[in-house]
Image (cartoon, rainbow, N blue to C red; front, side, top):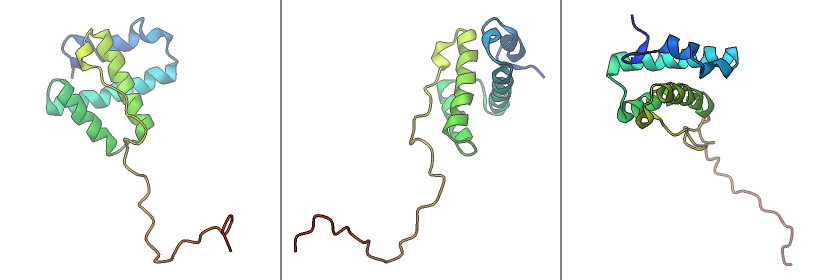
Length: 121
């Protein structure tokens, strides 16, 4: 199986390129995993387009929080820059763009207590 998200642009060649030489080995490994995720998604859903990448990010949001999502986006953006495809570069997820991690607290039916500071007699 080819390791090309875009035809002619191998993930392994990208990870060996001068672009990635300045990265920490753990960054290179993490980006490799992220790009393999994108490759699998593209193999199932089609050639990357801005719309497909938005669908990939929506898919990732079901599993990952904002930080992990942004690592995936950064990996993809670096790959697309290397491929000279600026049309496929995505914006990072912003704070508040992820679903709440905890369900809202149930209404207890109690009236909230107020402070008596500054109250007039």
